[in-house]
Length: 273
Length: 256
Ligand SMILES: Nc1ncnc2c1ncn2[C@@H]1O[C@H](COP(=O)(O)OP(=O)(O)O)[C@@H](O)[C@H]1O
Ligand SMILES: [Mg+2]
Image (cartoon, each protein chain N blue to C red):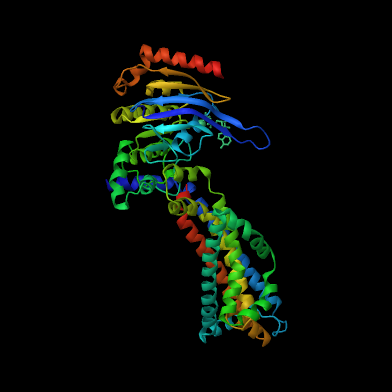
């Protein structure tokens, strides 16, 4: 009994490795290739910049040491909390406003006709140009930063939501009509799920633009957070320390993008084949 | 009084930069309670449009629809519609798709489960409630569509080529089930098909329609005694079946 089970296990593993582990091995080889390239790049940087002016160029080993220092004294942590709390709040407000306006425009032609030109113009223009004027109105504090983040992040959410809502397949709306679904049901169970992937890609774009807005706001309004660290340490010619917050911003942006993707996948389960 | 009357129904669709297109032209039809009426005709003769107007998904240009003598002004829970394609919401499970219709009818969530289970069992999908449409075969998806229409307990069922996109075998299986189902329930049914076979098997009367403009060409009674479900394959050997099938074929050939 045991023997036969063993035998079948053996024969199975003899049949399958070619099919089962090949894509895995392939993936491992690709990861290794990427890791190798990174190490090579850092090494080249380290050696090429070794003799350069330390005030202007930092090498990877100095950056690592500086990052470690800023981690230990808590500076990096508190700057990250400062930036992220502002960013997350701004991003959430932008998402809610964007989805609500997008829904209104997508389902009501009058609202769309009125708002469409402004939305498109503001989305296309370099919003940085507005920041000085904005500061006249809302100052240079927390409110200014939130406003700038919302301004940068809201338009892609609106535009993508409108596209999703307006694209809803007529067949699905017919189901709602045939069974006499209420307006609210049509919104919740037909339009919203249909538009979700569009909204999600709007959110991904908004995320990138929101992070830019956060850093720009920290550069231009009251200097604070991760952007503040970058400015302050650059001005003090502590270049290695200026790189640490840059690293954090890069990691955060990527982590948040992955998070949005995961949320999107969770809600898009019905689409998986 | 007939259960359903179609009175001098005309439907014209506007065509941009041209004369409007007449999809239905003066259609008259009475359907008795419990009757099964099949519609056949070349594509474009207005079968879908007729069903959609009866359901209230489309408004007629002129003429009217009466149910129990009262004019129909829009969709209603007294009619259950089965779509040809894209009839299920892909982001809802089979049970949730049925629940959608129940919720729309105002049945509270805690009283939906029992009905959902029952109609899923009726169409042979017991235990498949938590599958998403893409996890079901085409035939199973159509069964869910039929189950959803049954769930709201309509007086009239409207089915627009429900088996049109299925392979021949699945189609025949579902036809036989449909026969059993309708003979047990005795509902009034309007059934569009492009299969003469299907029409003769299932219907009490077959309405032959002709295109451009969509009109009723002929109404053919099918006098195969019921229940037919018990006949099985022998149904297709009865002289009435063979004769009516031939008659309808000849008429359709003249139209194409
Ligand atoms: N929404 C619409 N707008 C314009 N023309 C339509 C529309 N729906 C159907 N038609 C036209 O009306 C005619 C009848 O269509 P349909 O009822 O779908 O026929 P069938 O179901 O018999 O194939 C066709 O010529 C079709 O192109
Ligand atoms: Mg059709």
